[in-house]
Amino acid sequence: MKKIIVTLMLVIGLVSALSACGSSGSSDSKGAPTAPSSSDGGSTITITASNFKFEPAEIKVKKGDKVTLKLDSKEGMHGISQPDLNIDLKKTGETVTFTADKTGTFVFACNVMCGAGHPNMKGKIIVE
Ligand SMILES: [Cu+2]
Image (cartoon, rainbow, N blue to C red; front, side):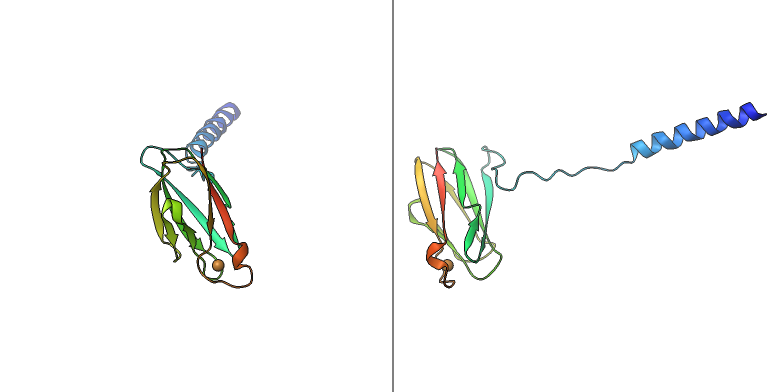
């Protein structure tokens, strides 16, 4: 009799252990926020602007990449301007898509008068 109970307990233990394993849930992966995801359909890079900096302040792309920039103003009103790459964003959530067709370092700056730190709001896009 004792043997049967022990066996039963073992079986129950095993079954619950297995089902617990199976239902451990899906793990959603959060990728690195600044790294471009792919080069085929173009990648989207979100630039977060706050008083008075851009995050990331430096973006690296490969020549020929199709890149979409998205402006996310977290604090205050900011924009992103880079005339050589035809970038001119002035509202949060706004995007621009460009093809990095020339190598070099392209400095972008805030184009909305946002306060004392405005002249220091700069970042760069490096096309290599
Ligand atoms: Cu500004």
